[in-house]
Image (cartoon, rainbow over all chains, first blue to last red; front, side, top):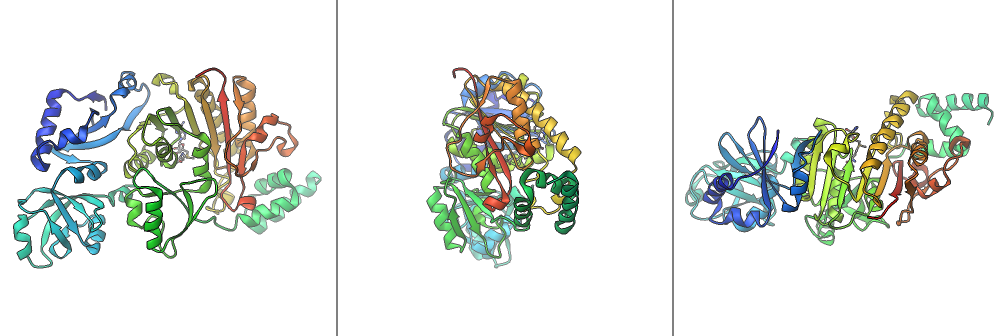
Length: 179
Length: 325
Ligand SMILES: C[S@@+](CC[C@H](N)C(=O)[O-])C[C@H]1O[C@@H](n2cnc3c(N)ncnc32)[C@H](O)[C@@H]1O
């Protein structure tokens, strides 16, 4: 499980995938002046953003130790698809319009790992199509996780209350479910 | 108390309060009858739940307001701006959304005090050893406002997962979490400004929280812990930068894991000196536990004791390594 500084070419690939889903320039804004580092594991590749000042530590390769986390976890590529880490969502919500706001009850269910039904939807960004990934927020604007729409956002209004609207991809309840 | 009489009394107390007799015998030798009784009685009462409000996610006052609106009664710990005792009523402390958002960390008052004593500064390189599940790592990052670097080192693979979760939940971005043995720091090539060693210990201070501890550990376990603590400290002292600060803490009240360990370290490492902790809390560390004379500077270390402070037992010692930074 070795760490590598991500090459420009590889980062370009991540940028394309992320920007396509969340909007042009999103990756650049989130990265700021940080340096992307990757870690390969059996499950896939994880990307981290670290201060370039940490080059001096990275060069030493952490002999005798196995890196488990560094800086901020940006996201992972699992089975060929990129997924943002939970800890980036707070920043992601400020740079993408792709939001889905849920009710209190919906927030409870979602953070227990459930998907989102029409009755829980308070608001959804217009013009999004099926399979679009959205940041899920509660009514106060707190970030609850990430979901994938199962219908075009324009059609949601016409659905019955118990119809599935978005599939849970990751939610903050995971922090304690995974303890 | 004569030895025979003490042994007899220890047996009676052990039976009455449900302890192994070697423990009550040590308490009698350390404190005498009256203080031992008051300790045993205090250990029957669980300390109040406490939380540290995480200013990395939201300003402290804002979280306080938010929690009060939800009916959580909070009371600030006098020497900790970010520390509060909290009454969650019939809810569990981890069940609020604010917990998932990383707005607070459920943590004992002594644990928060350890990091306050370390006093990490912005931009420094700090090491937190034996760090899972990360209560202290996330607090260090909070005080450093996510600047500099915190090396968070833990041996156990499963506990590592909780550490990483907590780092992410609390919005920590200045940490490097490494899995490995803190006795092998050489290879890292880092000379930190500060090191916190919250050492693995027998947990003898946690009886008020975990009554099973009254019977779960033997004297051999305590000796085993003391040996490992000594090895960890040796490794730490080699690694610490000249002029650097070391805080050693345990959640044990056993002098065998605290004052004895530090006394032997001071003997082996004349470059290490105990220094004063700025905050006012606890009582002084012991310089004559069980009648054995130890380095007098140990009176500058601090202890939390269930019967004096109504908290879990803890030991905190701050030291400085000779030299200029
Ligand atoms: C008292 S707990 C630490 C609590 C932690 N400091 C906190 O505040 O959340 C002690 C930890 O030391 C770890 N440990 C034991 N031996 C170790 C070693 N040689 N190197 C690194 N960690 C070790 C244990 O797995 C355990 O997680």
